[in-house]
Length: 83
Image (cartoon, rainbow, N blue to C red; front, top):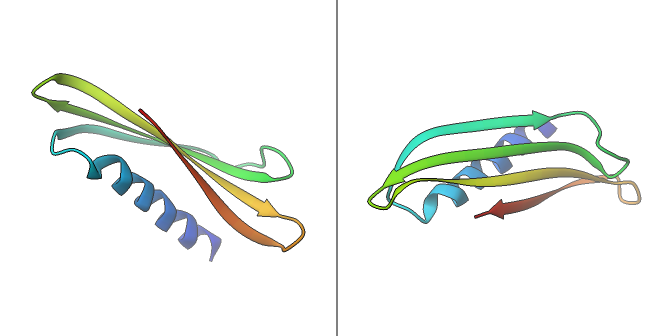
């Protein structure tokens, strides 16, 4: 069940990265650190997309942190986009 939620969040993050451009996508890379980072962050996914356009080659990176709240026993997601 949690994997489905993570997959949806990763795809939404990917959509956020490519939504603001009409340039061609050259490559997409997804890496994960799917082990507990600390007691609050249980997994981290990094997404990198390379583009080419009129101004040349560039890339955008993003990070999705999966967090566990011990008090409410719930999962939350934190997205960061690096430009």
